[in-house]
Length: 293
Ligand SMILES: [Zn+2]
Image (tube, rainbow, N blue to C red):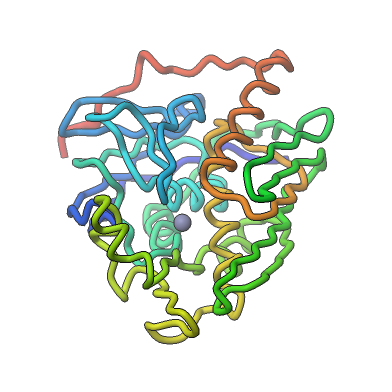
């Protein structure tokens, strides 16, 4: 049995966005049982529910909302929420991108720990009646098979020999998530850095917030795990799966996925959920603006 949960109190997190390079301040606040995870752009007075239909573009990160009022690089916070079982949360942010922090989701878990979690009652996790497959170019494929627990088996195969082929299969419990997934940092290729910057991406990237992958070595110190790259892919997938809006179970087998394909799976699951007759109602029109702090 899964439980809905939220934070016991509000907690602040601030830092620089990976792509925008802009500093932003985030307040993670408790929310009611049917609230879901909702972002609030305080500088624009816009609410953006963390649901697959609001996922806009996936250029090296997952962005929610319409241009001008969007929130970018949401996946590491959402992943921490999935991993820790936090299903109701108001995320107030004063700019267009969440802070990247150390490039992993451990600082978000740490913020949840600081705030404390409260249970809001049991919830039946959703698992599809039959396997669901989504595919993309270049052999990308994700399959979700019905199961009573959430397990992720992820395989990646990069031409860069520093990464190469990596495969990992894990049952996602809060304990396994915190230990084996959350610390895995995002990564970028040194060879692509200038091009990304020219396209307005990676402007906040530093040796302190991502693994810098060179042609034949990691350029900035030791990895946290020998297979940190595939662990980060699992982290990203769990973040994008939060966009289903309800806890899910099943065995997810992913080969060379990415944010766009992860979100395609989340959209398919939203459709399955609607077809199953589950209530898709949210309190979308009644989100309360954060109290002045
Ligand atoms: Zn990531």
